[in-house]
Length: 315
Ligand code: CA
Image (cartoon, rainbow, N blue to C red; front, side, top):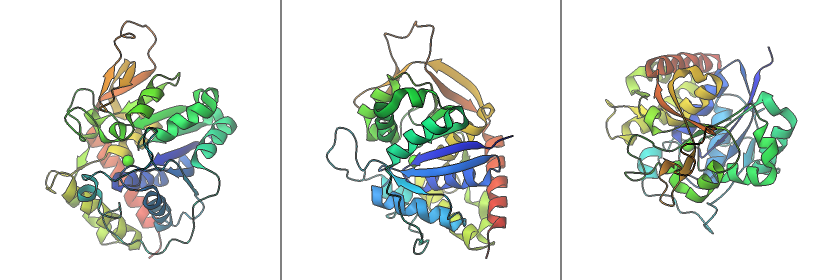
């Protein structure tokens, strides 16, 4: 069977880095490129971190492309004050991955995604785990091509739980609510992985302690993850939520989600995600929102697969 082709668009970010690790660990997925966008930190840092993580796992062949540096309604971007305590000043827990060998591609991330959609169609899965600015720009460029890909999955929103930017809004959507609104009103069918499920995928430092006693790749990813587990909720006993890894996992294996809610979403200016009033009784639903997950199967499988990926890396 041909491998599933995947592109991840991410604001790398610790859980973004952990999502990239998952994709690399899955032998059935061919990661054809990474697009970096602003979000958890500045675009240039997200580019550097994305290249650094790929090289950490000896994947010099996977190229990184530049997406948006700020939201649709903004002329520039300032990092949110909540970012550094969770992701560190450099976005990856202040871990130094060393000098990158590779550099960002000349082709823009938007062109890369659209060209790949035209080229691979149903064989391509797109995963967006940062603000939705890039996805909107892709739709603007060629909505039909985007409609033809195998699957589009986003990490974002909060439907039945409180947000993490404020009580109603989740950070990815709140970072560019206009883009999210335009994406949700497009023709695209989208799988949405919100906080409702990612908050059920907590795991703790002790679950991955063995990574720290392995090779350089293992030590680095352990240190990156440890910062997050201690920083996200200020208590490593609680653990950290695997927001972005779950989105990548669910793109490959949607059966990990045990309750999908079909609906038509919109985003308010505040970043709140909610079902549209006008489309409530429409039979056709463009979105399915994950409301429950087999969290234990997810975390067990994730740790097992990434452990095997680390074992394959050199000293
Ligand atoms: Ca992210």
